[in-house]
Length: 552
Image (cartoon, rainbow, N blue to C red):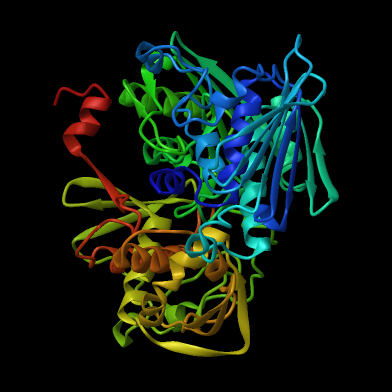
């Protein structure tokens, strides 16, 4: 019983089996790896490699708990270079499945080890070439209570495919082949890192990808990124690898976002594949069963190095923020309506999408505000992004996008719960990990103005918040982006929608529109955008004098 409980901590679904078997194959110096699964891995997972193999005397030991050949002493934990090191995987798999390991070393003829649901293993001689084949059948068949919580074969297969592609990205020098339900699906020949990343990227994005490299005495960095005019409205375009392991590290994610922040519209995220090689003595992977989290001894130095390198790469190429482009596999939104000063107080140099809720300004804000208030004086727009104001003896520089975003954010929150019925329900295919996430949070969606129900891996949306037309893609992206608390979910939704309908960089405002926007901005109680950035900065007369070297 103890082994079955322990197995559940390491092997929770078929993708965990795929991950552990691939780690073993790659640790064995394989150059060719064949992966196969049936029914999403529920019925079968098989991984075949041409690695160094397992000696017949070691095969029975391989399925014992915490037996491993990858570390020899406790000191090795401070210098880990292998993907696996705990010796838990094969023992855990053997406890909850029908396991077969067929292996041969360079000088041995080959042996077959068979374990049935944790029973004592049997060993026999069976010839094969050097390498190892591991077959795992009927996972959790001896644990019906656990097996019934597995998802459909399609969902489990998607999770297995995602796991495989993470290894494919991290080991471009290895050839991988995939067979699903006895049908050949894909092969990934050995390639350069750039070629491998392109092979797994969207075809429209792949030609735009660029490589940058750098390092110091304990960090080596390779980053493959798309120019800032290609971006997403969620973080799913950022991939982080440390010492060839795919990780989820909030600090590193933030460092990447910060590096790209000045070159992207607010509320958007880059496409970036980040590969870090860190001195094993400086990083600890022994804090998470799947090694998804890390602890870095010099975390602040790592984040600083990463941000500086990426910014130094981007700044010479994209010193001026490019015009935004919605690249979530869709064209830019159709520009359908020109705002009129007499109706809303805004005027732009070209048409701009405006949702219905943004047209309903309070009565006092509907008239054009052409005269500057006595407390400040509008000076003009620079770089089609910043508005300059003289106020109380200081130069105020206002970020027009962040300012408009905050205004729209407050309007949206004030209308929380207002709904509109869809003529045709919106069907949102969720990522597997999002199904359980939303299953327990449908009430939060309802409070925002959604009426939705789950049908297997699809969220059927019949009512949406009263935002107007043209927000379907933003809603789909939001529903596939996991977040934390109820407050996080609410703020993220309103921030995303506010950003989508706000003035962007490179939008040219006439004087009347700029003054009207500033009038609303200076009424705000909290001068920060929904993402926490300041709406303006102040430069005092003394600071200007110091910059110009004036002494009086």
